[in-house]
Each structure stands twice: as C-alpha cells, then as structure tokens.
Amino acid sequence: MRAIKSLLMMAAGAGALTVLAAAQRPNQRPAALAETSGGLWEISGAPGGKGLQRLCVADTAVLAQFEHRAQMCTRLVISDTPPTAVIHYTCAGGGFGRSKLTLITPRSIRIETQGISDNLPFNYVIQARRIGDCPRR
Image 1 (tube, one colour):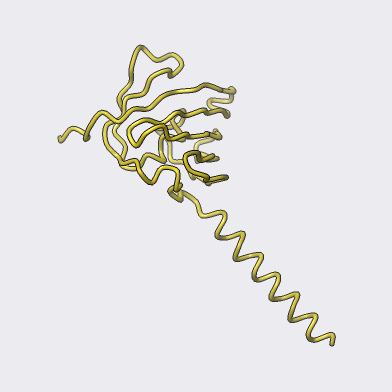
Image 2 (cartoon, one colour):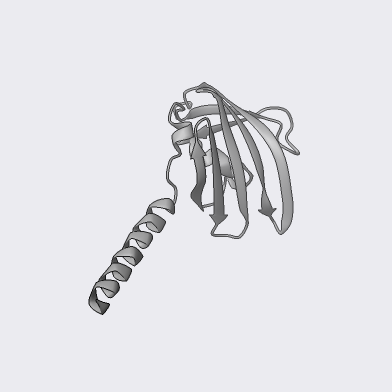
C-alpha cells in the first residue's frame, strides 16, 4: 500500500512539473496574435513620442515589450484568450514589464503596458497598426 502511495505521489509530481513547464514556455507566440504578421507597424500614443513611430518587427509578440524594444528580453505568456493576451517580460539589462495586447483586427493591436524602465515606473496605452512590409535594405 505504501509503495502505491509513493508511486501516485511521484506521478502527480511529474504531471505537475509537465503542466508548469508547458505554462512557462519563454517567448511563446500567443494565440491571440495568430492572425497578425510581422512587417512595418506604426505606433501611436507612445509617451515622449514625436508623432507616429514606425517599427519593423518579424514577430508581433515583440510589441509587448515596446518600452524595451532595443533590449534582449524573455517573454512569458500569462494569459491567452483571443482576442487578448497578457505577456510578462524581463530584460537582461534590467527592467521588466507586463503588457495586455488586444487584437482589434489582424492589422490593429491595442497595447496596455506597465513596468520598470531605467529604474522608473511606466504605464501607458499605445495603438499599433500594420502599414505594410518592412523596407528592403
């Protein structure tokens, strides 16, 4: 009887680890962004931005880390219920954030983001709109 309990505990532990590992796949692409594609995106509403900003991205999930777009960050999908995904990210050089991306259309995404950048808090909402393919160099 004791051996059976031990086996059940080990199986439950292994199952829990499998579920945890599946839930924490870094840089996983959220299903909420499945209809979007990389390319040239126009960003409006960025703080300190002088008008519209253009950003060329291969994967739209990187828009979640707009505040840290020039840094190497690891993203973790916290929730993914289309049309919305919540992504937490942590950057190697310091700083982190949490963004809620809401797909309006395959070419339009609302991004609510907050976190710490340069040891200061940030919190803002931006709109991203795909305007075409990235320019060729």
